[in-house]
Image 1 (cartoon, helix red, strand yellow):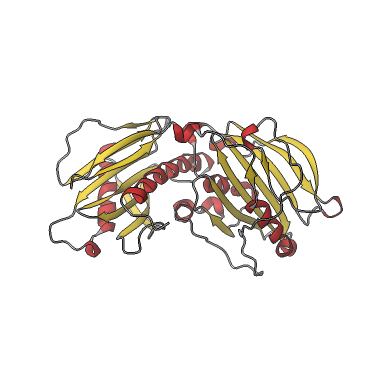
Image 2: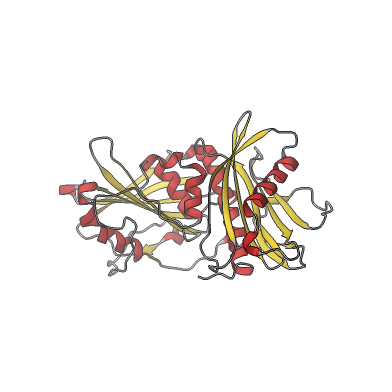
Length: 383
């Protein structure tokens, strides 16, 4: 189930990888293409920033279908969630049904678009047939069900525009999926918004710097509610560190540390023990934030991230921390950059339920901000 993917599922999205079960058809589940834009459009007067045009599937009749959605309230990720339009062919509704949803989000809980899609798939799925997560503000999941005697596929596409989300949900039977796939690919791939808008979330990020042991400087942005832990504490070479806490989370579940470690003279980049560095920095976070707490570290997965030069020595590490009273998720990304090893280590809730998943989703967004900064300034992005 998508809800049980936990950190490994989040990792797949951050790396933009497709993780698909074997399908009986030859169609790529989340393909996108360009089609002819439909005349007119579906009006969203309460969400002017989400007004869009696209190539709507032919043969569907569209019905104003206002309905408040409360299935995801426990996650704390939405202040408003509504279905606005429903399109289907009345004579064969099971063949294809498309619903248009709009949601508003609290800025202090902003997440990656693909994480929103995964959250929705917990209820609208829950199987996992594909995830697209290359982009920060657009993401998709192909989900569905095979166990009720009515096999189906559900494509969930999410766009974030400021504090609003546009969500398209397309449902089809497994039998009809292959014949409908091209229409869905065109609907998603052709979508364009009518007007450009400002993004108060990104515009409101606060710029920070950390000086690495070599003297190089890394710039990175964080939301204003992420505040420094133990600011002003002296740091000893050969390590640079800056630790930040999510002050909007009353439970104090999430933190991120930005680290720089000096590369020993004469050391080869290829020999850098990134796994040991990641574990050590994560342990350091635990010792400072939860002193005296005993825990057991269980590695979940590790892999190289996209968007870096092929010869860059880098890796992402995902762990589960088992405490006496709960579990936590730990992620760490480190790379060799000249005379430094630079990266981040983060801690957050483990997604055992919808509320914890919401907390983890926001932490993933913070990880992505720092990861993008590393790509742009240190990793010499190949994209």
